[in-house]
Amino acid sequence: MVFAPRNDELPDAYVTPRATPIPDRARPLVEDLARRVDADPDISPAFKALWLRYVGV
Image 1 (cartoon, rainbow, N blue to C red):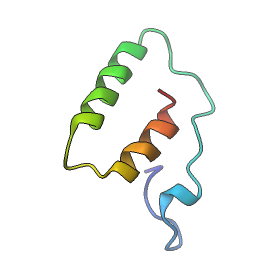
Image 2: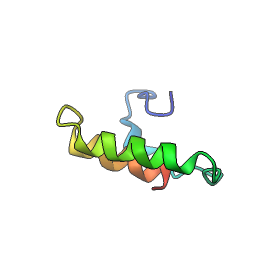
Image 3: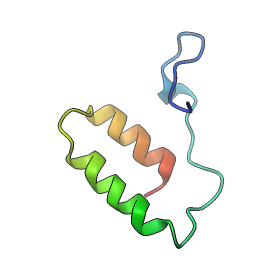
């Protein structure tokens, strides 16, 4: 729900990078998901950038 609008604000106004690093054992899964998100034409470039900034990959 981190990307849900709050008080009519778009999420890019308040989403910041995760405060905790991705655990080493999860990193390959997150990197795979990041590649899939990046390759998906149905996801807007703006949301991709926001999501990647939040995840930190």
